[in-house]
Image 1 (cartoon, rainbow, N blue to C red):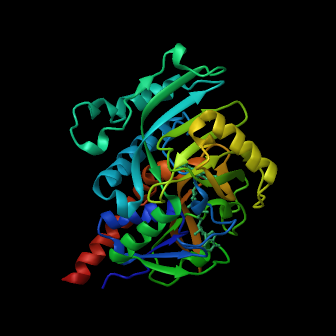
Image 2 (cartoon, protein in one colour):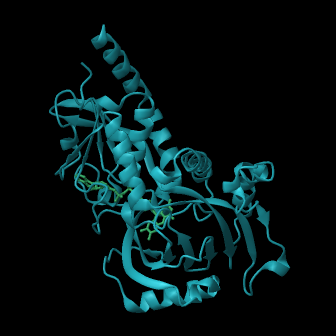
Length: 369
Ligand SMILES: Cc1cc2nc3c(=O)[nH]c(=O)nc-3n(C[C@H](O)[C@H](O)[C@H](O)COP(=O)(O)OP(=O)(O)OC[C@H]3O[C@@H](n4cnc5c(N)ncnc54)[C@H](O)[C@@H]3O)c2cc1C
């Protein structure tokens, strides 16, 4: 029998769930146990995934990894938006993004190579008729004070519901979920049959014994949940020291997430009325549809992005457990892009353990004989 706890994933945020998803796609579901203090459906300051906006955008970095993970993430998310939009809470959504300061020309060029808009005019499927083709906006179409702007078809994700969807899919593939707060990384080797651990602990990687990565830090973001059923488009304004964004939430009966803030090093889970006021002012200038009397403010939240100096850490490591060296793969530090980058990061994390996974597959086949 293949052992359920042969592979342990610590963490049930989007990063741990995406690793399990990639492994389950390879038929390894019944060998995986996810151990986590917080699970899909929970809310906690130390659990970032439910607080995300959440969309695919040009907000991510311009390094080679970010470009690669964006491309893989876009393909993965648009596939879900095609195959199971209602169940996965992932939808195609028209988007406009503006830059007030530094314009990431190389990134825009890279995105334009894979965004599916090029094919849109050839598609007759009615669900595409509202989508936007990729376009760099001419200067006369830019709002005052804006240096550059693009339109394209992006993806929106209802973050908490998407995590619940992934949990359900994974359970159907044989993945077991165990709620437990582990005292250290070593405790991830939950039984003698645990061969491989993925460390997907997000912000906790800063303090968890066995990791204690001092490059990890929180980037706080307050957001406002509002009902604004006439808003059907993403709008984003990338400023010098701020981000302003409006993101429709799929499957929510007309709700939007309004943001935001990128407060580096701030780990405060409280919400502040002056920040809510600033968000409402900035977003209703960006999309005047929000000024409609129909708009209803529902709540404010604050989430901590798990940022890391130098970018996410996806790295194979060894750890001594009861005198024996055991393989480990770190996958944390996704910052503000865990949903758009998570699938690509998971592919890299899984690749880092290819030899172990091959042995597990051989063992599973032998056990069946
Ligand atoms: C306001 C805001 C807006 C955002 N918008 C977007 C967006 O539009 N697009 C996008 O792609 N991303 C967005 N993000 C970023 C995204 O939410 C994060 O990158 C992502 O959620 C990080 O996921 P994670 O799995 O690494 O961490 P988490 O979701 O925090 O999960 C960590 C997991 O590890 C577990 N864990 C930790 N320590 C232990 C332990 N000792 N024992 C057991 N379990 C443990 C936790 O319980 C949890 O299950 C946004 C974030 C915020 C805050």
